[in-house]
Image (cartoon, rainbow, N blue to C red):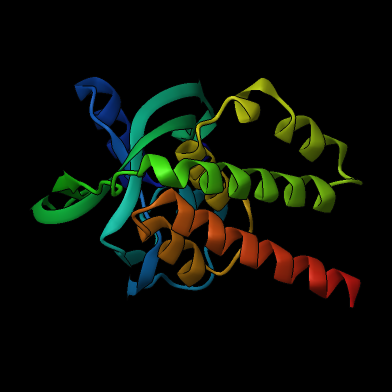
Length: 199
């Protein structure tokens, strides 16, 4: 997933992750811990840290790739999400958070459930294609080898990360520990969106 990084503390965090070959976590937030003043010039925004938020405990993480260094110290980066982690113990708060974490694993998938899981995977894909019929870029993405070759587990996370929805729903799906649960929730959501389009 691409990101534009401009706050000083996050620029430092990205450099730390790259220099030390550690994963960077990206989480949804529960609320604001420290707010910023409402009006800022672009120069002030680039040279000061912005609002501080309370994170959800379960989040996605992956290694960072620096795509480009921009003016005023800004960065274009790509985070290659590879796992889910759960916050356990804070190791550092300033200038950026470092936490001890544990893997947040899925429950094992029974062989007897694979057929239904595959069917649900296909239903979600067909719904996405139907909803994207007038968007050439979306169709190109969904029919690409990258998407077509995803395992059911990878597909459930990719869809959750790509479809716009309220944060509490997205977080709830992220915390589900079985791909069938995630795909069922996503299919229900996509069906409700299509129904609202047809109304």
